[in-house]
Image 1 (tube, rainbow, N blue to C red):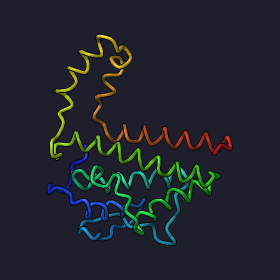
Image 2 (cartoon, rainbow, N blue to C red):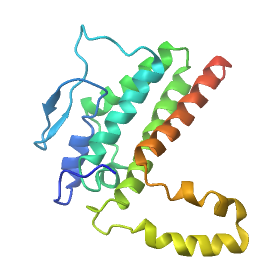
Image 3 (cartoon, rainbow, N blue to C red):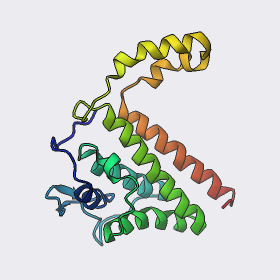
Image 4 (cartoon, rainbow, N blue to C red):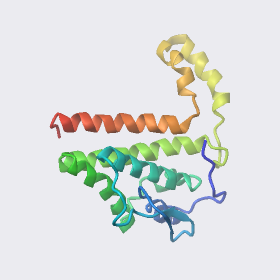
Length: 192
């Protein structure tokens, strides 16, 4: 599980400015909050091989930026900050999707569906981190989950090992792949 680099409680305005700087690549630059963030690829650098690579790289960069602050996702979610950096993140997802054949609606909604996934995933990930304000001990919760599931939820019981798997990298990538594959199927079908 990634460790959070900042022990101090995140300030909403600072986190919104900082987390909005996420981008898919390159050398870091300093943010207004005073910590290192990814810098966008400069002209002349090789472009990602595919729209999936470009959009996936942006999603991973946003996740990394949110994880860089304790409660980063919780503080940033719902703020609707309007900055060049926020629009740059959106552009780095919407552009490749449109270039690959998605309609403007599918590209816009698809990009923001991915961003909502990233925010929700990181909120859950950060709640289980030792650095969380009130960390949740998943191991201590498993017993009660199994007990109730054994009574009347057989499919949940069967999936218990996977539900309590703390490999957040693998879980994040699996969820991201599901969304990207769904977008790919829709674009190939000419939908939306």
